[in-house]
Image (cartoon, rainbow over all chains, first blue to last red; front, side, top):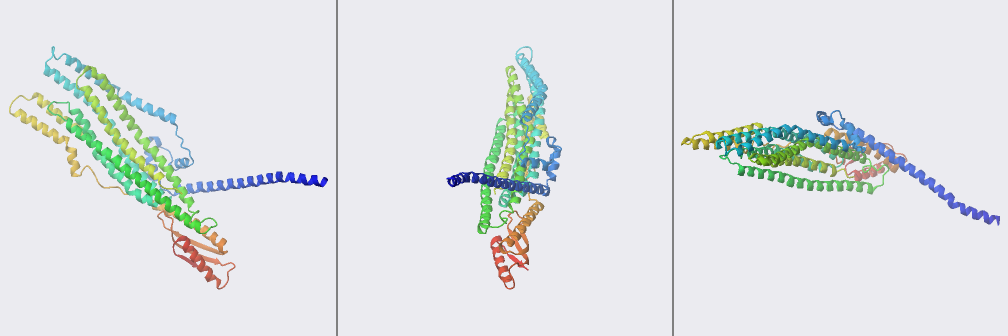
Length: 396
Length: 152
């Protein structure tokens, strides 16, 4: 009986013993796994730091120091923070800053608004007096002068806004020339040498051809549209509506073709390049690692650290470049938006008094849209190339 | 751009003022027509410079990769490959060797050449050295896809 009890107790405790022992083994295994992962992560971080030290970012750092928003920021530290997942973007203060900038621009335009309102009111009064004590020619001359005065005020405000738009597009060109070589280098280093070879002419075309098209053709033609809109109503002897419409259609076609054709071409190219690089790299890894199981996994495993490090730095730089793009483009867009709003409000306010001034202001408000479209087109194409450079390679 | 706007506005202003102040006569239509022609030429002056090619440059910038960085990445990968290769030779064949792996610096990380200098053949003695060297050479050529050189 005692023997049977002993055997039964032993049989009962065996599963309990195995459970705790297995749990300990599992826990020890999990600890070893955690340690191995931690060790791999530390090795990767060290590799990334070494690669960042090797990478030549001096020109890009010098450019950052010229921007007030990024002055004093170390690019390498910011890239490391991005790789660690620290975007540190304060959306609240960003929204507040955007709103303040917009309202500041509106407040700067208030004196101009007062002048426009005063000139329109005077014109309205004189028009009503035309049939009274004023000679018709004299009131026409006074209306002409009021139109010129309003036009001079509006055009002087517009010049500052258009200059900032042109400066922003030129700044995007400078950014492209600084960022693209580094991104292409990192793309090649992360195993995307085919993608780099495919994207090189495309980004050169964007940075040279498309940008030149906008700065040398689209923007001057848009200025011509503005000027024609102004001078069209200046004199009944000189009519410029058809010429203005012609220039508008040139702008629309050029902007549409640039966005549509180039954007589509770039996207298809990027997808094809990504597929080729991804498959060829995986094929090499499969052939080598599948043939002989190797201690340390050479040729498939040992290069992975370099590939992964380069890919992570490339993605971080791409994300940072998007922030740079936003920093350059945001203020001119706010200026253009404020100007458009100002002109539309002025047109609405002066409409009751009649005359040519409301039509002028309304037409100028619409024509400013070509500048907004040009800036947004260049920014979008730049953003698209950054997206494709980041996403189309570095797939291990 | 500013000069263009000012010159165009000035031309239109002048033609408008001339239309208003010129007395009726035989010269007045001629003067008005000349003013309109000058305004038209000023209007299309950007197009003229575009057609001449002075405003638009067709030269594209050239972007090249940072060769120094690619070289550094390749050297790092080569060091890793050499260490892994030496470990493999020790584990697979039980021999001690120093290896030198040369990779292409274009980012493909494919091997250009591999050489191994065996310092200790371990359990292999005498004539087995040649056989084992040939085996290792064949295995390395199959693995790296390039010429392998075994030295001792």
